[in-house]
Length: 247
Image (cartoon, rainbow, N blue to C red; front, side, top):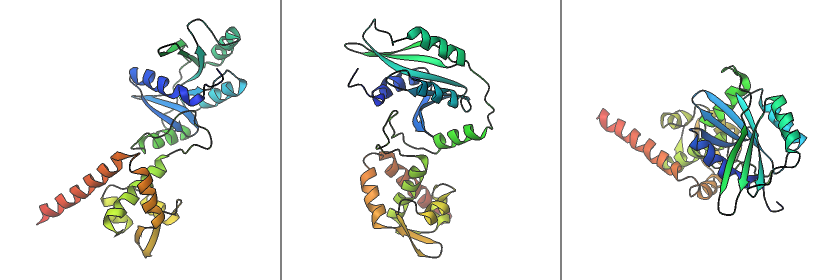
């Protein structure tokens, strides 16, 4: 499989998990795929071949997730990964589930070799809360599991900053409170004052506008995130509707 990349497994695995009723997010706090269904939270770590590093990643995820799978690819209808018996012994012994992503001539299918040992992870665990905050903070899924370090990862933080930028693009200038009243996140003040991406500039105390770098960033992301403009329009319509009700 010389040309197969980890990110090639993203599509088949997402389709499979969504078919099981999970919502799926890629690259959440370093985990390839995170799948959530009701209160259940599982992780899938992917590699093009089995290794001790892959197994170690999966074991680390057990501290956060209810269950953890590893996923590795195979080509053809009969081929199995090398040392399949040893892989099975190791995974079963550690309570890690195993998925095969099988590439056939005309289709790709995901096979469950065995499920992980599930555990009750405290819902208030610090690591788990951080994962759920990241998932809930995203309004678009733009990441691909298995991406390299050179590929951009669009986090919930960046998505919140983009929404603030979109609002400022329409408003010209605004305070953090005015932006929050339009639906921006409660961390708006911090995002504006820290200005991590260089998208904002302070006009005066408590008032911000969009920097030219922010205008450029919006131009880059608007096509990738069409929902961004929809959210902005909806927020402004809701504001105008409230004004009319007060007249």
